[in-house]
Image (cartoon, rainbow, N blue to C red; front, side, top):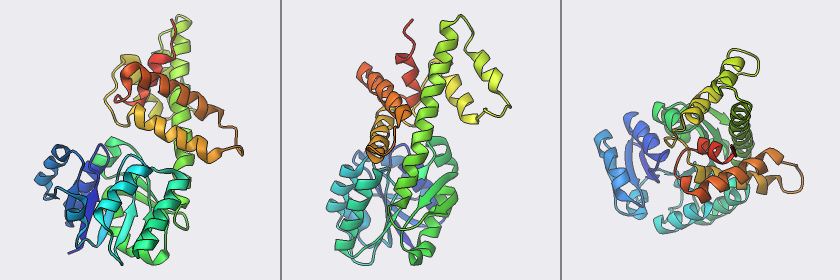
Length: 282
């Protein structure tokens, strides 16, 4: 049986590991806070105390961690072995994707860069979109994991291309969230019920299901974390770093400003929809 090591079982990693175990694969999981990983035992996952315990003897190593430095540190503790397949599914940005690929090469491991599009609910349902990049001969080896966690896998070229595509998707999601919050705040400032905006776009060419999910959270001012404001701010910085001087990413800059203000106000662990709290000034 293929053995999978899961390093990182937070909001995204836990349901992903559970779905891989449900698919019949042998899963060992580690998380910095062990208590967050313990519920996975109900799904047949073996929870271990160290990254090295998880990785030793594994055919595939999956990392689902907060950022590039965190991935680098955990992989250093884990000790990749030559020939192991490392599927890096964290959102780390373009530069860190290259850095991690070099670490894999030095260890003699096979590196696949495969961040995902989706948040907590798609992760729980096994309906993430996997943006995979890496050697073509690794595709079959990755398939059992990708099929378990995702509804679709998009292969986009050499390792690192997946992270590049993830940033382009994030630029859209972040700006959409911010624009939605601004529209709802504007409606309120003009004396309108903000829900009228959602009703107006419903079913039309500019409608999107995402607007109704996040819009209802903003109107109710309830923000259970599917993707925290703190991590969204991290991703917005990765988007801006990737764009550099080549692209005027005004939407991402505006979103980051609002996310930073939300984090500074103490809302960092709530869903990124909480940025609406710092947009309305009335």
